[in-house]
Image 1 (spheres, rainbow, N blue to C red):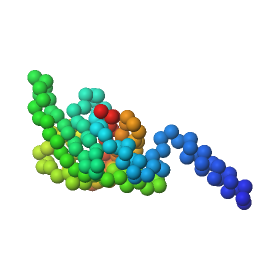
Image 2 (tube, helix red, strand yellow):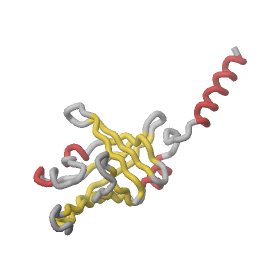
Image 3 (cartoon, rainbow, N blue to C red):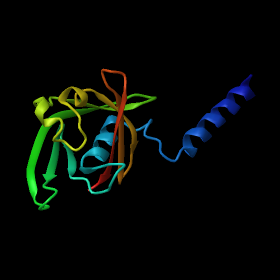
Image 4 (cartoon, helix red, strand yellow):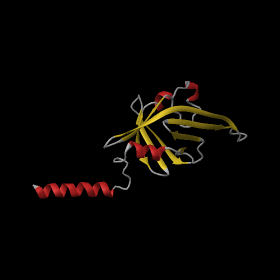
Length: 152
């Protein structure tokens, strides 16, 4: 029995150490330090994102620009503000977004197309390293929504 426990402990430690990306055991403080920067949203269709998110001291600023397709000039430069907190558990870590409040007319204006209701929820931190942030959440209709960022 004692040997079995040693073998299980060894296998568990090897599996935890061998994981390339292991945010599961990071503290809320460490995750908060890693997320505090400006992130550029990525899209599957192109890499020319005009939407950035800046996480800093419990606040998040979503900034987006709309470009006139004819002239190429920026038509609109808008910032939406909200709050965030980190909730780290043993098996998952979350970024809880709150305080976003904007009219539905802006939903089509943001590059990501999220409404305030979509944003104000707990987002699972799927990946967080120095250059990449990937968040995922289930919306009120049961659809999985995700946002992929690179460090700006």
